[in-house]
Picture 1 (cartoon, each protein chain N blue to C red):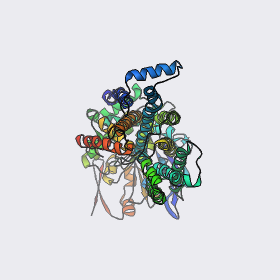
Picture 2 (picture 1 turned 120 degrees about the vertical axis):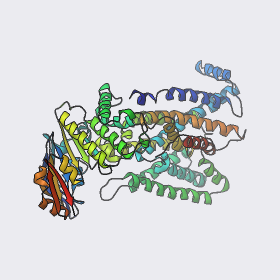
Picture 3 (picture 1 turned 60 degrees about the horizontal axis):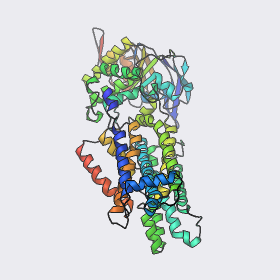
Length: 259
Length: 344
């Protein structure tokens, strides 16, 4: 599990994150939502050790994030963000193999190659292993990166540390087909492997459909956390987004409309 | 998967054979032709400690051979420097002199040429390389110092690049000023040095440049994987275990040593560092583990070839090598660039 305790982050006098304590459990699809400027990305950056919180701490399982090195962290935690552009042309398989970089020193082992192959098959990019990454479409590129980050944590680590996947708005530039495709793939992955998944999404209906646990941020504060029924209420959404939603429930599914 | 790693195989042996052939040709031809027999007999006499090499054998042992080997090391240094900096800056237009190294060397050399005779600070044979090397180190240090952010103490790669370009302009105008106030012969020396020359090649130069090239090459191979990771972005590289700050300083240091030492002995040779890594990427791919090692060999090939042409085209006069590297390199570069769909 990932746990944040009293995280506060400020830039000058401006409070970006205000005393955020949340827990993300394995086996759940944990999604962070909130309006622009709510502090979602900042929270993810703190969790990923990209920036240091002014106060509070983050724990991965029983380890304190502050005590972990970059390479220790890379062995157990993968991160995917939106819109990754390559500086130089590479083949798809070379990009996916980067996910295994934390696990070998010079040459990839058979285990690394197997992890890449299985992750690539899982995201249907095995067929394009030898293609030039630059020639792929946006959706194909993101499939390659999903394969890369999943290959990074394909096997459980030796020290029983758990495995963590952080997704920073990886679906933002994708069409609805790919958004659903990746959400289903993530659920499939959660069923097979014991992984903590934390993601930021913009689309409230995506969160309503797929999330097991939702964290709603607003102006750097934790507005609500819990199941979708607990978080996606009329009052919460109106407070955060300043728009009144119409919530329609049908066969255990929730749909949100705005007028 | 197998295909991806095996596509890089075969290039290194082929390039090594090409290098050997070019080196032999470059020794063979020149103002005086040297046959294979001359080379063999010179080696035999040298190994047996026998005195009395004839003129051709002496030209081989004391001029052509050190010159050819120096070409290999200098070409390797510049090309590897280019590969390292392009990877570090994630930018295809970077060349190894861009962080201030070559312009500082040029300024140091210009100071020596313009003022050395007047103030008599000649301290022997190595005054010029020493002045150039000191100039290179000073200007690069200045670029690093100025690109540090006041608030965070961090230096962003883009800031480094911009400060590098600014310092380049400053030092080159310094070189321009020095050639303006210098007397004609000195001004010509400055111009020639900025186009590169290998005519001063000797064994001590070979040994010094060789040690720096080989050491830096071996060390930089250790960071090839980390440089690969940088291709998907600075943040993403950190997510897959790269300690960005320490990598940045190590790569910049390796590059400065290599380029400063090489430039100090032969002058400014541009373009090799820019195109060699691109040629290899176009031919095979961008994996830095492949790129760094093979850039060293192809850099050597290109510079040896350019040196041979620079001595042959206007025999017995010698063209500055910097002119030839561009004339040889640019057409190959443009043809490959247009033939393959190599784009960013």
